[in-house]
Length: 133
Image: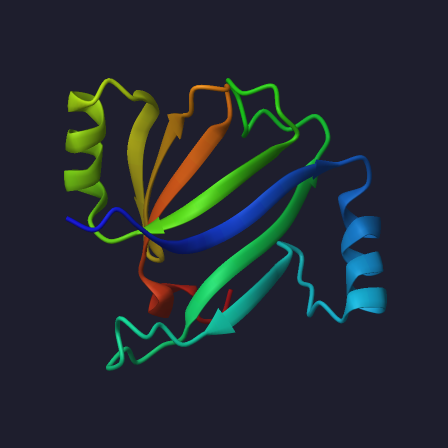
């Protein structure tokens, strides 16, 4: 079973998320929205995909609890192929699962903790579900 297939997103805490988005837009050319920025790319493992794959970049408010129970100011999001099966395997391997899997029109999400206390978000994407976001 494939596990991680790519980077789904980079999320970090910022004192002033709107200002940091503006800075990245101005100085690095990020096409920012209220959520951050989406980088579109072609998934070579899915050549028949009707929608491009995405990697998300998003600053969060410094006081967000979305990264809890991690105390780190960042969270990585990894794209996965079959989240349900991967969660079963991770449980069997003794990995700490945080919360319950959630489903949205753009995919399934679950969270784990790595050995150094980093919260990791796992995303089984439905890239077409992000159109118009």
